[in-house]
Length: 136
Image (tube, rainbow, N blue to C red; front, side, top):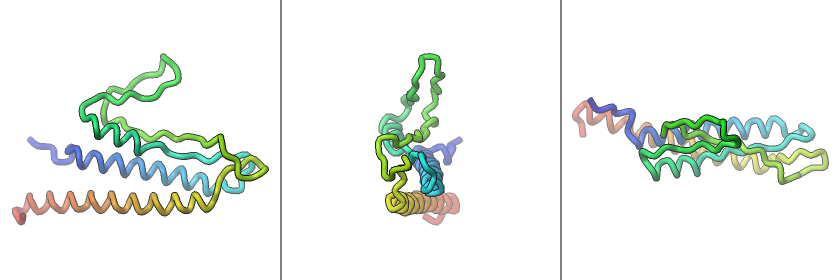
């Protein structure tokens, strides 16, 4: 039996939405801490890993580890975003490096990205619905 929901297109869009949600949480944390002295903004590195995973279907994604005792997950669905602290920039004298204008731009961009991916996923499901109903 064909598992429609496990197609590479749907799985790719699912992972893209997951990455966008993680990015949204990071942006929200940055905005919430805009006035916290010493807070360092965080970014999510997700798109590069998703792009690499989609280029090499069937290959095992190697997780970045810092110690040889860390466990690798041998599953291609394990694409996850990495949250990276931005330590190298400083906007204010109190050590906080959150630039609110930059965060608002990232927020808007991420909302547009999420909306576009969710529309594509919705279109994919509409097409599947039409095929099942025989209206194509």
